[in-house]
Length: 335
Image (cartoon, rainbow, N blue to C red; front, side):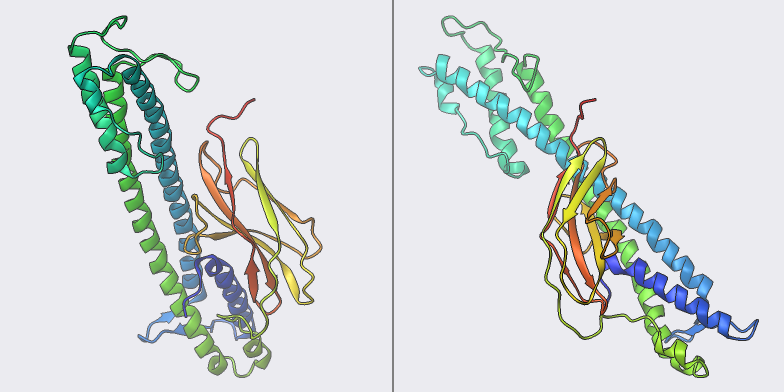
């Protein structure tokens, strides 16, 4: 069974440490080499290179997830601004054009959570209706072309042309989101390939070492595992997270009373949902350490979202995660 993403680097480090002990125990010039099912041999240095490649690729995935999250944030901001103008337009239409043919073109406001097509269609109809109203006769007391006044959210007035430009920008932002999403998919594929290679070596390591190191029974007995020992699952702890300006999250958690407690681990990923596929280990705390984590992980740009969990880890390797917590770095932080 393949390891979850967040365990690969830590588990690889355990194998590298044990591998070094084996090399130190063997005669000089005869280091342990692991034979794979295809007959090729892997040295410790080659395995370390795979581990380093995974660390680098995890950073690539993190960067791509950040760009995707920011692209989605840009879309949400654009939708909020357009929806406010849409409602302003309808208010003007209701007040001044009810007894005209244009009123039959009145659109119902889409929900802010609607997808691209469902959100954009009524916006597009308002855009064209607005242009036709500008070209038609002006109702009593109205000056054409219609200009929507400034608001608290949008501090300048808006013309029909500016509304059309904002709607066009939204479509480009959706296209950018698609590109970013594809980049994440490709970055994950590259990461997963490295993980598969690491796993193949670690699995072969456990098969090779008992024979290759039979004169060192203590080293055979202390081989790293690829799965937890049999045992109970601990009780998850309650945890909470807040943003700490300018670029950190602070996580606090309750204590575990499990007699087999080995420590606590903070894991997370960029985005608005916690993902076991993308979550990585951010930090570890010993059982007696102050029950908090403060980290800048993932919050290197304004507007980015972060999903986090605190895990209780037992000496057997069994674990339980808290409920997911979510933090967003604001788009603007007061000095």
